[in-house]
Image (cartoon, rainbow, N blue to C red):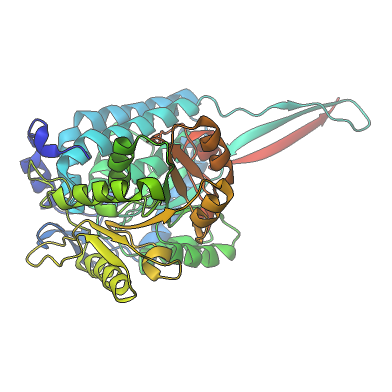
Length: 502
């Protein structure tokens, strides 16, 4: 894993600006206006590096959700949006990307304050990715075409299909990558011509609020974008059950995904879900071991393991097992924990005390059940919500630490004895999740064959990355549908068939 301390020390020129924004008044954005929650309630959002309060944020409830839905429905009927040319939608999105880029340092500092991630990660990965996602989807606005179809029935027909926006979309995003996830949902929906109601996670609303300011300044028609800050059990539940919402898209836990499916069933809403994961990282005996070690460590320790696609299960051929595990454990022990605002921090805190305690519980449970601690695992006391990067060996398939999504920097490492790809795939697939998988190997035939056997929505080989053009989503209980790529934007459309007798 590349050490932040070996690179130029990051500058945070907009930290004061980010702090000033955090301390300002935060309202809901509904129908093109900033408004207080109807109840007048607010809630605190905090800095996970210290536990200190950053801001008070408006707490939306059922009435606010209804107002946002009505504003979005009105926007869908307004010619200003309904009849806007695709090229103009693309232009507005590109203006948003430009505005985000112009304020990139402020957004990076704000993301670090509210989420805890190292500011270098926010500035040089999360923000550029968010900007690129917006620009990529802006390009799709002018390319959502139907097709002409040759019919085989009696008569002479002109038949074709249209792609039309699905309508009002409720978008619920998680706290682990708040801005990047918000942009990944907003951009394709707006490019397709939908109206959006965004609900950021209650833990991390600040960059969404600042993004809403940019959207308001750019000139999207009123009601096209709405922002509700609040809690999942109130604002989120009201949106998913509202009959005026045509589609719900959610990224988060499988448990909450089940609740959304039940709520959406009443009105048969379209639903896209990107849920949990337990990604296997498979190291075959011919792999480039140093690269595999670095890649395996990065896959589980980036963002304090708070990544749906984190490589939390490591399968290594027995001939390379000790070398790989020792290498990953060595990296784990060397990682510098601290505030994301510090220059040499490599891993920040987890999001909350609740999440810290959840991760600790899984580690303690694994050790109680017989796992061996190879790195980390010690409690860190004091302010902030820190968890040591942890490596476990000797886990069994029935153990919770190996079966369940922990969403923290905890790796379970296992060995396999042969190169039977069916057996390797069977072990990797022995989970209720199927979001991603990683293979390290220089055997081209083996990687292609193994990739076909793995039950995962994304298979990365030798560090292959994710991109806005690649569809992303999961098999099994990792979700429904795909985001990104053509599949991602088409998920915000309905197909209409037209047949004309000539």
